[in-house]
Image 1 (spheres, one colour):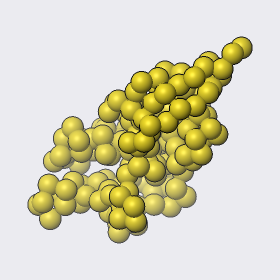
Image 2 (spheres, helix red, strand yellow):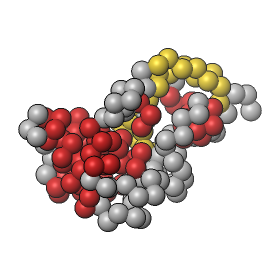
Image 3 (cartoon, helix red, strand yellow):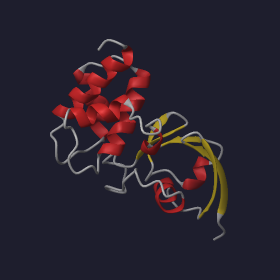
Length: 159
């Protein structure tokens, strides 16, 4: 099979790559673009570890073909910080000790970013519902939920 030439934007930067038509966006990000933040947890779209934003929409990158990124904008966890300055969501996960093994963290951060863009003042139930597709085997979610709500308050200027 011939490789496909793809032109896209990743974290605000124009990017071009060649990929096999059967190659997932997750594999392209990790193996071709060396953006290893998104993790392969299940390969079936059930765990959320590979979550990215594709044209602003939260997707499991293990279920999207790399070729489907043509002309689209991709946002990964690597694009959240502004240089050395962490995004409020990143900082609050650290402050609330909401991280353990780190496999789920990139997907949770991207999912939370998408949530707060859509709803800057979510209730605990809304955060839990939004993160239902992100599995964490270590923390039990309470610290993650509190960290996201704390970041939301700061981002709204309420903190």
